[in-house]
Figure 1 (cartoon, rainbow, N blue to C red):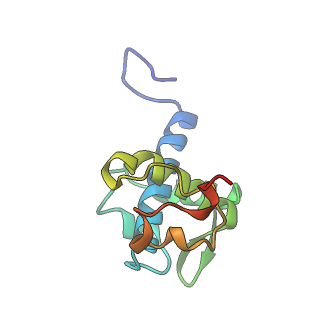
Figure 2 (spheres, rainbow, N blue to C red; figure 1 turned 180 degrees about the horizontal axis):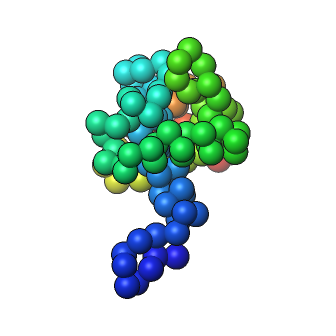
Length: 127
């Protein structure tokens, strides 16, 4: 909970804030083929985090099965990719024009391709 007198947040709230920022930024970078893996240094130019915050958050995310180390960076676990897609879709739905969340279908669904973002996903069609 934020400390009303100092403006500081607790460690738990800080972690949740930076976790969500990392999930969204990493999802964007990997989905747009900017990076195959993402490291804290890759996001430092996008996220104005205090020193050490990104590294510490990445490490906690590994412990929570959201990320796993690979090739000098990190990639999403299945759970991490789902959470990242969901947050990204919620955060940017008004900008991208998604009518529905693309996190509802499977990770291999064609609708996750940016070229199909404006199209209706078959998993959302009703019989």
